[in-house]
Length: 85
Picture 1 (cartoon, rainbow, N blue to C red):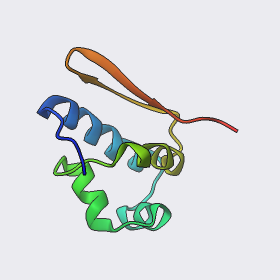
Picture 2: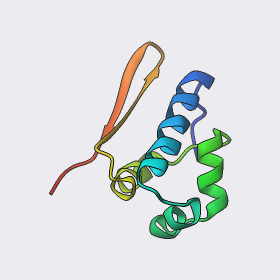
Picture 3: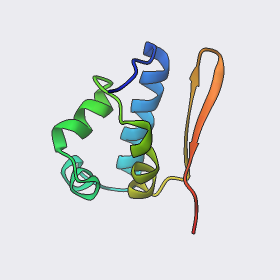
């Protein structure tokens, strides 16, 4: 179950996801296949209609080739970082 984020952090997160996919030159379909989910779910995340589960974010970062995603929540910066091997 996804916890509902206020509008601004949700907007910032979905923008970063869209940008990450654009930079990695992946379609929503290709990203969905890599994450073993659906294109509709990727579209929903990017539109801010839903959010990926926290446990999904490290896999999402890896799939997009990103090291981190940061957004503001209640006046605090929240960062999710990918562990490098």
